[in-house]
Length: 121
Image 1 (tube, rainbow, N blue to C red):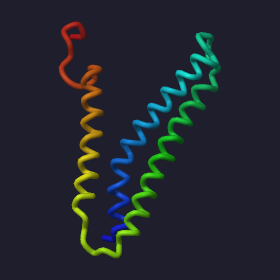
Image 2 (image 1 turned 30 degrees about the vertical axis):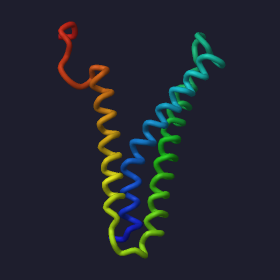
Image 3 (image 1 turned 90 degrees about the vertical axis):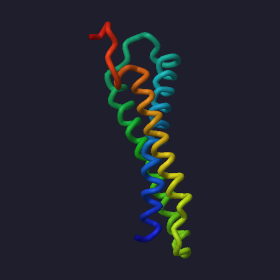
């Protein structure tokens, strides 16, 4: 396997989680700015739901594609060296596991994963 394709995966898999978290944070900040400065507590126009959803997906895809392209370019530069750099593989795997762990812990803290409380039962 050429290094350009390997690094595409090494950057793309953690990039999926990074772009997801950044796009959700940007989405929340955008909603907060619109709520405080534009629409307030008045009813929001129905078109804002569709536009905000499309922007969320667009920001996610742009960031993820940028991480994939960065990995492809980095792998292409490293193809001259035939040896595989295991540090890069371990960093990518560690970052992927770290982001999965953060997501699982957040979902557990809000009650979506794990035992249900007595009041819910």
